[in-house]
Length: 333
Image (cartoon, rainbow, N blue to C red):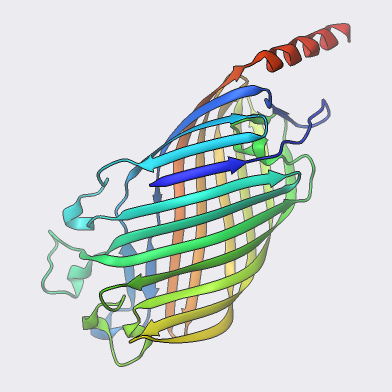
Protein backbone atom coordinates (compact mmCIF):
# COMPACT_ATOMS: atom_id res chain seq x y z
CA UNK A 1 0.00 0.00 0.00
CA UNK A 2 1.21 3.49 -0.89
CA UNK A 3 -0.06 6.60 0.90
CA UNK A 4 1.12 10.16 0.39
CA UNK A 5 0.22 13.29 2.35
CA UNK A 6 1.39 16.77 1.49
CA UNK A 7 1.06 19.97 3.51
CA UNK A 8 2.29 23.21 2.01
CA UNK A 9 2.52 26.91 2.62
CA UNK A 10 2.14 28.98 -0.55
CA UNK A 11 3.99 32.21 -1.09
CA UNK A 12 2.13 35.21 -2.52
CA UNK A 13 2.73 35.76 -6.23
CA UNK A 14 2.75 39.00 -8.18
CA UNK A 15 3.05 40.08 -11.80
CA UNK A 16 6.87 40.15 -11.69
CA UNK A 17 7.30 36.46 -10.82
CA UNK A 18 7.89 33.89 -13.60
CA UNK A 19 5.16 31.50 -12.41
CA UNK A 20 1.41 31.41 -11.80
CA UNK A 21 -0.12 29.69 -8.78
CA UNK A 22 -3.83 28.82 -8.84
CA UNK A 23 -4.10 28.80 -5.05
CA UNK A 24 -7.82 29.69 -5.08
CA UNK A 25 -8.75 26.84 -7.42
CA UNK A 26 -9.71 23.36 -6.32
CA UNK A 27 -7.22 20.92 -7.86
CA UNK A 28 -8.27 17.30 -8.39
CA UNK A 29 -5.80 14.80 -9.83
CA UNK A 30 -5.09 11.12 -10.32
CA UNK A 31 -1.88 9.30 -11.16
CA UNK A 32 -0.77 5.91 -12.40
CA UNK A 33 2.77 4.53 -12.35
CA UNK A 34 5.12 2.17 -10.59
CA UNK A 35 7.87 2.08 -7.96
CA UNK A 36 10.93 -0.13 -7.95
CA UNK A 37 14.08 -0.73 -5.89
CA UNK A 38 16.62 -2.99 -7.65
CA UNK A 39 20.05 -3.47 -6.09
CA UNK A 40 23.35 -5.17 -6.80
CA UNK A 41 26.11 -6.69 -4.66
CA UNK A 42 29.66 -6.93 -6.00
CA UNK A 43 32.45 -9.01 -4.42
CA UNK A 44 34.82 -11.88 -5.21
CA UNK A 45 32.30 -14.69 -4.78
CA UNK A 46 32.90 -18.39 -5.34
CA UNK A 47 32.34 -20.04 -8.75
CA UNK A 48 33.93 -17.01 -10.41
CA UNK A 49 30.88 -14.79 -9.81
CA UNK A 50 31.68 -11.09 -9.37
CA UNK A 51 28.29 -9.38 -9.34
CA UNK A 52 24.76 -10.32 -8.24
CA UNK A 53 21.79 -8.34 -9.57
CA UNK A 54 18.62 -8.45 -7.45
CA UNK A 55 15.28 -7.45 -8.99
CA UNK A 56 11.87 -6.96 -7.42
CA UNK A 57 8.61 -7.62 -9.23
CA UNK A 58 6.66 -4.50 -10.17
CA UNK A 59 3.07 -3.53 -9.47
CA UNK A 60 1.06 -0.70 -10.95
CA UNK A 61 0.19 2.04 -8.44
CA UNK A 62 -2.89 4.24 -8.59
CA UNK A 63 -3.38 7.47 -6.68
CA UNK A 64 -6.06 10.14 -6.14
CA UNK A 65 -5.39 13.61 -4.77
CA UNK A 66 -6.85 17.02 -3.99
CA UNK A 67 -5.24 20.42 -3.33
CA UNK A 68 -6.71 23.74 -2.22
CA UNK A 69 -4.92 26.80 -0.77
CA UNK A 70 -2.39 25.48 1.80
CA UNK A 71 -3.79 21.93 1.92
CA UNK A 72 -2.97 18.95 -0.32
CA UNK A 73 -3.68 15.27 0.12
CA UNK A 74 -2.89 12.22 -2.02
CA UNK A 75 -3.90 8.66 -1.22
CA UNK A 76 -2.67 5.80 -3.36
CA UNK A 77 -2.33 2.03 -3.42
CA UNK A 78 -0.76 -0.78 -5.41
CA UNK A 79 -3.13 -2.61 -7.74
CA UNK A 80 -3.45 -6.40 -7.35
CA UNK A 81 -1.12 -8.55 -9.43
CA UNK A 82 2.46 -8.14 -10.56
CA UNK A 83 3.49 -6.77 -13.95
CA UNK A 84 6.16 -9.47 -14.50
CA UNK A 85 5.45 -13.20 -14.41
CA UNK A 86 5.66 -14.57 -10.85
CA UNK A 87 7.18 -17.81 -12.16
CA UNK A 88 10.25 -15.80 -13.20
CA UNK A 89 10.25 -12.81 -10.83
CA UNK A 90 8.36 -14.03 -7.75
CA UNK A 91 6.05 -11.81 -5.73
CA UNK A 92 7.06 -8.51 -4.11
CA UNK A 93 5.16 -6.90 -1.23
CA UNK A 94 5.27 -3.10 -1.05
CA UNK A 95 4.93 -0.50 1.66
CA UNK A 96 5.57 3.14 0.80
CA UNK A 97 4.51 6.23 2.76
CA UNK A 98 5.70 9.82 2.40
CA UNK A 99 5.26 13.38 3.62
CA UNK A 100 6.12 16.51 1.63
CA UNK A 101 5.83 20.17 2.62
CA UNK A 102 7.51 23.50 2.00
CA UNK A 103 7.90 26.88 3.66
CA UNK A 104 9.11 29.69 1.39
CA UNK A 105 12.34 28.48 -0.31
CA UNK A 106 12.70 25.28 1.72
CA UNK A 107 11.22 21.99 0.49
CA UNK A 108 11.16 18.92 2.77
CA UNK A 109 10.36 15.27 2.06
CA UNK A 110 10.18 12.31 4.45
CA UNK A 111 9.81 8.79 3.00
CA UNK A 112 9.56 5.22 4.28
CA UNK A 113 9.91 2.47 1.67
CA UNK A 114 9.92 -1.29 2.14
CA UNK A 115 10.11 -4.04 -0.50
CA UNK A 116 9.92 -7.73 0.38
CA UNK A 117 10.62 -10.43 -2.21
CA UNK A 118 13.46 -10.41 -4.76
CA UNK A 119 15.05 -12.58 -7.42
CA UNK A 120 18.69 -12.89 -8.47
CA UNK A 121 18.72 -12.24 -12.19
CA UNK A 122 20.19 -15.00 -14.42
CA UNK A 123 21.14 -17.23 -11.50
CA UNK A 124 20.91 -20.20 -13.90
CA UNK A 125 24.39 -19.30 -15.18
CA UNK A 126 25.94 -20.73 -12.00
CA UNK A 127 23.03 -22.65 -10.41
CA UNK A 128 22.45 -26.02 -12.12
CA UNK A 129 18.95 -26.37 -10.65
CA UNK A 130 17.73 -23.51 -12.88
CA UNK A 131 17.53 -23.16 -16.67
CA UNK A 132 17.03 -20.51 -19.35
CA UNK A 133 13.26 -21.12 -19.00
CA UNK A 134 13.38 -20.35 -15.25
CA UNK A 135 16.55 -18.25 -15.13
CA UNK A 136 16.14 -16.37 -11.85
CA UNK A 137 16.55 -17.56 -8.27
CA UNK A 138 13.55 -16.49 -6.16
CA UNK A 139 14.17 -15.21 -2.61
CA UNK A 140 10.85 -14.18 -0.99
CA UNK A 141 12.43 -13.34 2.39
CA UNK A 142 14.94 -10.73 1.19
CA UNK A 143 13.80 -7.32 2.37
CA UNK A 144 14.95 -3.81 1.32
CA UNK A 145 14.14 -0.79 3.52
CA UNK A 146 14.81 2.94 3.17
CA UNK A 147 13.92 5.71 5.62
CA UNK A 148 14.99 9.15 4.40
CA UNK A 149 14.50 12.81 5.27
CA UNK A 150 15.64 15.38 2.72
CA UNK A 151 15.59 19.19 2.76
CA UNK A 152 16.18 21.33 -0.35
CA UNK A 153 17.03 25.03 0.02
CA UNK A 154 16.65 26.96 -3.25
CA UNK A 155 18.74 30.12 -3.60
CA UNK A 156 16.43 31.97 -6.02
CA UNK A 157 13.06 33.28 -4.87
CA UNK A 158 11.84 32.80 -8.44
CA UNK A 159 12.05 29.02 -8.02
CA UNK A 160 8.74 27.86 -6.56
CA UNK A 161 8.48 24.11 -5.97
CA UNK A 162 4.66 24.07 -6.34
CA UNK A 163 4.85 25.63 -9.79
CA UNK A 164 7.68 23.23 -10.69
CA UNK A 165 5.63 20.17 -9.67
CA UNK A 166 2.83 21.52 -11.82
CA UNK A 167 -0.30 20.60 -9.88
CA UNK A 168 -1.32 23.92 -8.32
CA UNK A 169 0.48 26.11 -10.81
CA UNK A 170 2.96 26.36 -13.65
CA UNK A 171 5.71 28.55 -15.03
CA UNK A 172 5.32 31.42 -17.51
CA UNK A 173 9.00 31.79 -18.42
CA UNK A 174 12.36 30.12 -17.56
CA UNK A 175 13.78 30.02 -14.04
CA UNK A 176 16.93 28.49 -12.61
CA UNK A 177 18.65 28.28 -9.26
CA UNK A 178 21.45 26.75 -7.27
CA UNK A 179 20.30 24.64 -4.35
CA UNK A 180 21.59 22.69 -1.37
CA UNK A 181 20.08 19.39 -0.31
CA UNK A 182 20.68 17.97 3.15
CA UNK A 183 19.98 14.27 3.48
CA UNK A 184 19.54 11.88 6.41
CA UNK A 185 19.08 8.22 5.45
CA UNK A 186 18.80 4.78 6.95
CA UNK A 187 18.70 1.98 4.40
CA UNK A 188 19.67 -1.64 4.03
CA UNK A 189 18.91 -5.27 3.26
CA UNK A 190 18.08 -8.27 5.37
CA UNK A 191 17.13 -11.90 4.87
CA UNK A 192 15.04 -13.45 7.66
CA UNK A 193 15.86 -16.98 6.47
CA UNK A 194 19.64 -16.83 6.06
CA UNK A 195 22.30 -14.86 4.23
CA UNK A 196 21.63 -12.33 1.49
CA UNK A 197 24.25 -13.94 -0.76
CA UNK A 198 23.40 -17.58 -1.64
CA UNK A 199 25.35 -20.15 0.38
CA UNK A 200 26.77 -21.72 -2.80
CA UNK A 201 28.69 -18.47 -3.44
CA UNK A 202 29.70 -17.69 0.15
CA UNK A 203 33.16 -18.26 1.54
CA UNK A 204 34.50 -18.02 5.08
CA UNK A 205 34.39 -14.21 5.24
CA UNK A 206 31.74 -12.68 7.50
CA UNK A 207 30.49 -10.19 4.92
CA UNK A 208 29.61 -12.87 2.33
CA UNK A 209 27.48 -14.64 4.98
CA UNK A 210 25.75 -11.46 6.17
CA UNK A 211 22.02 -11.59 6.84
CA UNK A 212 21.89 -7.77 7.12
CA UNK A 213 23.77 -5.05 5.21
CA UNK A 214 23.00 -1.36 5.63
CA UNK A 215 24.03 2.15 6.57
CA UNK A 216 23.02 5.34 8.37
CA UNK A 217 24.34 8.45 6.65
CA UNK A 218 24.15 12.24 6.74
CA UNK A 219 25.36 14.60 4.06
CA UNK A 220 24.97 17.66 1.86
CA UNK A 221 24.45 17.71 -1.91
CA UNK A 222 24.86 20.98 -3.85
CA UNK A 223 23.00 21.11 -7.14
CA UNK A 224 21.39 23.10 -9.92
CA UNK A 225 17.74 23.20 -11.05
CA UNK A 226 16.12 24.55 -14.22
CA UNK A 227 12.47 24.89 -15.24
CA UNK A 228 10.84 26.24 -18.40
CA UNK A 229 7.47 26.22 -20.16
CA UNK A 230 7.23 26.53 -23.95
CA UNK A 231 3.83 26.55 -25.71
CA UNK A 232 2.21 25.06 -22.58
CA UNK A 233 4.84 22.27 -22.39
CA UNK A 234 6.70 22.48 -19.08
CA UNK A 235 9.83 20.61 -18.06
CA UNK A 236 12.17 20.72 -15.06
CA UNK A 237 15.43 19.02 -14.18
CA UNK A 238 17.35 18.77 -10.89
CA UNK A 239 20.96 17.60 -10.74
CA UNK A 240 23.40 17.51 -7.83
CA UNK A 241 26.52 15.75 -6.62
CA UNK A 242 27.78 15.58 -3.04
CA UNK A 243 28.80 13.24 -0.27
CA UNK A 244 27.71 11.78 3.05
CA UNK A 245 29.33 10.64 6.29
CA UNK A 246 28.27 7.04 6.66
CA UNK A 247 28.04 4.51 9.47
CA UNK A 248 27.86 1.22 7.52
CA UNK A 249 27.37 -2.24 8.99
CA UNK A 250 26.62 -5.91 8.41
CA UNK A 251 25.33 -8.69 10.66
CA UNK A 252 26.45 -12.33 10.61
CA UNK A 253 25.27 -15.00 13.09
CA UNK A 254 23.80 -12.32 15.35
CA UNK A 255 27.04 -10.29 15.51
CA UNK A 256 27.19 -6.83 13.95
CA UNK A 257 30.32 -5.09 12.67
CA UNK A 258 30.19 -1.39 11.81
CA UNK A 259 32.53 0.96 9.96
CA UNK A 260 32.74 4.73 9.53
CA UNK A 261 33.36 6.17 6.09
CA UNK A 262 32.23 8.57 3.36
CA UNK A 263 30.22 7.87 0.21
CA UNK A 264 29.18 9.86 -2.88
CA UNK A 265 25.57 10.91 -3.39
CA UNK A 266 23.76 11.91 -6.58
CA UNK A 267 20.54 13.94 -6.68
CA UNK A 268 18.54 13.62 -9.91
CA UNK A 269 14.93 14.41 -10.78
CA UNK A 270 13.15 14.96 -14.10
CA UNK A 271 9.61 16.27 -14.61
CA UNK A 272 7.68 17.31 -17.69
CA UNK A 273 4.26 17.63 -19.25
CA UNK A 274 1.49 19.81 -20.62
CA UNK A 275 -0.19 22.45 -18.46
CA UNK A 276 -2.97 24.96 -19.09
CA UNK A 277 -4.89 26.96 -16.44
CA UNK A 278 -7.78 24.45 -16.34
CA UNK A 279 -5.92 21.10 -16.59
CA UNK A 280 -2.50 19.39 -16.71
CA UNK A 281 -0.85 16.12 -17.77
CA UNK A 282 2.58 15.48 -16.22
CA UNK A 283 5.23 12.78 -16.16
CA UNK A 284 7.02 12.68 -12.80
CA UNK A 285 10.20 10.71 -12.10
CA UNK A 286 12.23 10.45 -8.88
CA UNK A 287 15.50 8.60 -8.32
CA UNK A 288 17.16 7.88 -4.97
CA UNK A 289 20.63 6.34 -5.31
CA UNK A 290 22.17 4.45 -2.37
CA UNK A 291 25.63 2.95 -2.06
CA UNK A 292 27.71 1.14 0.59
CA UNK A 293 31.26 -0.21 0.32
CA UNK A 294 32.59 -2.54 3.05
CA UNK A 295 36.05 -3.90 2.27
CA UNK A 296 35.65 -5.62 -1.14
CA UNK A 297 31.86 -5.75 -0.96
CA UNK A 298 29.95 -3.06 -2.88
CA UNK A 299 26.19 -2.64 -2.37
CA UNK A 300 24.32 -0.29 -4.75
CA UNK A 301 20.57 0.34 -4.79
CA UNK A 302 18.22 2.69 -6.63
CA UNK A 303 14.76 3.51 -5.31
CA UNK A 304 12.79 5.11 -8.14
CA UNK A 305 9.27 6.19 -9.05
CA UNK A 306 7.78 6.88 -12.48
CA UNK A 307 4.18 8.07 -12.76
CA UNK A 308 1.80 9.93 -15.04
CA UNK A 309 -0.33 12.58 -13.32
CA UNK A 310 -3.56 13.98 -14.80
CA UNK A 311 -5.62 16.69 -13.12
CA UNK A 312 -8.03 19.61 -13.38
CA UNK A 313 -8.04 23.03 -11.70
CA UNK A 314 -11.65 23.96 -10.90
CA UNK A 315 -12.59 27.58 -10.35
CA UNK A 316 -14.14 28.47 -7.00
CA UNK A 317 -15.86 31.69 -5.91
CA UNK A 318 -12.55 33.12 -4.76
CA UNK A 319 -10.75 32.28 -8.01
CA UNK A 320 -13.59 33.75 -10.12
CA UNK A 321 -13.44 36.97 -8.08
CA UNK A 322 -9.65 37.10 -8.47
CA UNK A 323 -10.03 36.52 -12.24
CA UNK A 324 -12.55 39.41 -12.61
CA UNK A 325 -10.31 41.78 -10.61
CA UNK A 326 -7.32 40.88 -12.76
CA UNK A 327 -9.39 41.38 -15.95
CA UNK A 328 -10.52 44.84 -14.79
CA UNK A 329 -6.95 45.76 -13.92
CA UNK A 330 -5.66 44.58 -17.31
CA UNK A 331 -8.38 46.57 -19.15
CA UNK A 332 -7.56 49.70 -17.16
CA UNK A 333 -3.91 49.42 -18.21
